[in-house]
Every structure is written in C-alpha cells, then in structure tokens.
Length: 318
Image 1: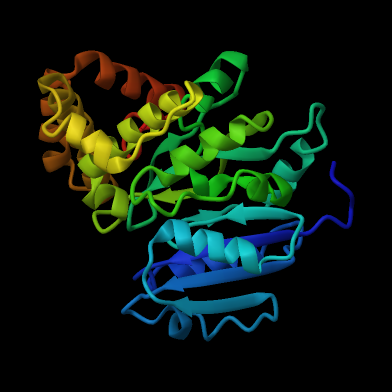
Image 2: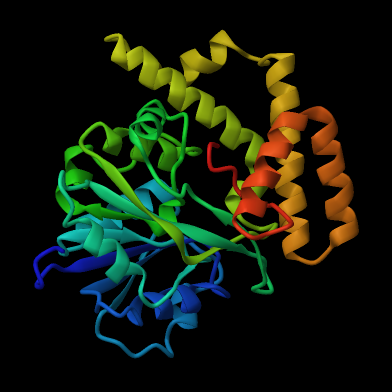
C-alpha cells in the first residue's frame, strides 16, 4: 500500500458534457480514500460545465476553462495544475464506484512497483443500464508486450491511476494526436514499468451516440494504425509524421475497410443496445458478424464470460 499520506489528484477533461459531469465529479469526491483535489478542465464547451457544477460545494473541486484544444491538452493541463502524488483520469461522462481508488492504490504496493493501475469498467447507456464490460481481467507478460506495441488498450483511460512521476517522465499525452492519444500514452507508460489492473468493474464507462469515440470511430481506427506504426518506426531509430503516414496509404486497404466497418457496426450495436433500441442493434450486430465472424464471436464470448449476453462499446484492443 502506498504511504498513508499519498495524495491523488483527479483530472476530468470536459467538452459539452454538462449533463454528465456532475455525476463524474460526485463519484470522485465520494471515494472511500479521500482525493486531494478534483480538477475539471472545461475544453471550450458551449454548454457551461461550471454552471452544472455550481451545486457541488466542496473546496477540493476546481473548474478551469480554456479554449478548445482537444482532450490530450486538457488532460495535460490538468496534470500540470495537479499537486498529488498520483494522477487519476476520469472522463466527464464516466463515473467511479466508491472503493475504486482504494482498490487501485493497494496495487501500487506490489513489487515491482507499477507505473499505472487500471480497472475494468461497466459499459452503461445514456439511461444507466449496464450492457457490457471493458478492460482486461489480468495483465501477464505477454499482454504487457502487446500494450507496449499499442496492440492492446488494457483498460479505459477513465479507470487509470498513474504515478505523477511516470506521467511526466513520458511527457504526458501527445497533443498532436486527435485520435488514439490514450492508446499511445499507455503504450509509452508501459515502457517505463509494469502496468497492473483490478480485474473487476470499478466504475462505469458511458456508451452513447454523442461520445467522440462513437462519432469518429473510423478516424480512431486510423489513428490507432498510425500510433502502432510510429512506435515501430521509432523503435528502429526513425520517426513518422501523420502527414507521411497518410501520404503512404491514402485510401487504406480493402481488408482494413472490412475490419473497420465490422468493428464500427459492432460498436454501433452496443450504443443502440445501451439505449434499448434492440431491433436496430440486432441488424448491426448481424451485419458485423457477416463481415468479421471471428471478431464478433470473440467479443461476444468476452461479454458472456463477464456475465452479459449483449456486447457493446469500445473494443479493448482498439
């Protein structure tokens, strides 16, 4: 267990999520291990998160408004403003269960000491019903290697608790990335030390049509490929820019199109199931299965193993 005086700063980037952010903030402030501070970074929202949070009277809460520069910048700014020994990241439309941080901080006492600890999360829809689980159950050496290569996103960034020293050592989130910045960040973290995970849900990861990952899924997939290729090029001593990556593959391959379409349909089915639109979800799930049967079977088995008959949400492997 970390030193009893260890402090945790919670960083919540927020962009047009005023209807959800009060729940996120309340869940952070209600942790069984008291947090040091909660920093909400309003990334140029048009729906006034500060007004939505005015009813929360707690000196640990701080709201900072900036011009819109993207989630990576918002998280980095929150981390710069933070003074805690550990940084816990929480997206504005997600929430934590009361013992989340307590369970995770205990893992930092393990040897070798991890640089970050994540957890599984329940997928929930806009109405709050759980429809699946995201995140790995454990992270052995083989899975750690996949994380370092950006071949696996082991846990949602909203579940992560990161050593502040490790965060600054890797330079935080890459602000040049507008997709897959969390995958890139976790991959770089994994090169500095082991990652750990609590293999049971310790919070909720909200699945809804307005989320950035739902609206820009194909771009997210392209960003994922870029992050993977850039890491490979860097390992060989080179460098890869986004412009160079796009110029080398302007249209992508037919195989990539099929894979992206199947994953997009599967994710859309999860969003619709979360909203209880089961008929629309069903035909998207069926179309996804026609395009990529092994992928859909694997994902459904993962969800059933976790106790859910309906899968959905973000693919843990991007």
